[in-house]
Structures are given as C-alpha cells and as structure tokens.
Image (tube, rainbow, N blue to C red; front, side):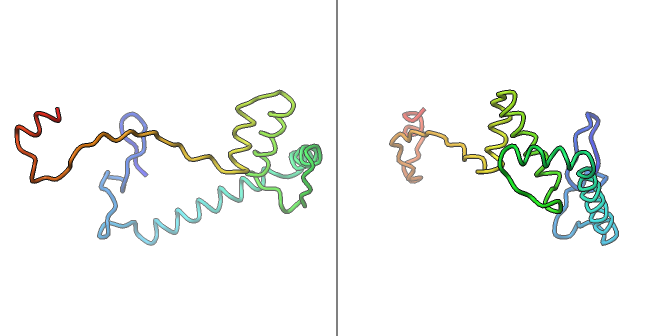
Length: 133
C-alpha cells in the first residue's frame, strides 16, 4: 500500500489508483499479502511463549480464568494484561478496554430532534425555501 507525503496510507494501488471491479491486485500480490499476514500472526503467537506464557497464566489464575497452553494468543494475553492493570492499578481506561473486548463496544447513540419540515419537492419554490431558511 502506498503512502502520501505525510506518511498516511493511500487507498488503491501503489500509484494511488482506487481499486474497482476492473482494477484489482494481481494474484501474486494477494498471495504475498496472505503470506505476510500469516507470518505476522505466527510472530504474534510466538511472542506468547516461555516467560510470557507463565505471566499470562498467573494473571489468568488471579482473575479466575482457566486456559490451556494452546488457548493463549496475543489477543488473550493483551486482554489479560488490561485486566491486571485495571485491577492492580485501578486504571479505568484499562477496565473500559477490557470490558469492550468482553462485551463488545456499546453503540454510540445520537439524539436527533426532527422538526416538522414537509419534504414534498413539489412545494419547493423559492418562497417556500426562504421560509425554511
């Protein structure tokens, strides 16, 4: 994926052309992307081993979660660390992040008050529009 002069990602191919039905990545590029994604996942899973796995087990036992060794992933380890931080340090942001992971983030609601405006386009005359404004 290409970046602009400020370092932000540009949608589309390396030239900045947006992907469409006719403009798709080559099968080779897709294959490379899948390989890269799998390598990153394998790396993340490898990080949860040895001493880190022991630390994760201690945190899991502390909060009453029973997990097998093969069930520990980077995602679970990060969640456990958030829980530990919330409990031990009283970190409310860590608590909120952990709860969002467990329960899902609540939907953001927007309170909207509708005024009574007739949207019948046949009545949209210049006089009628002036009254609305």
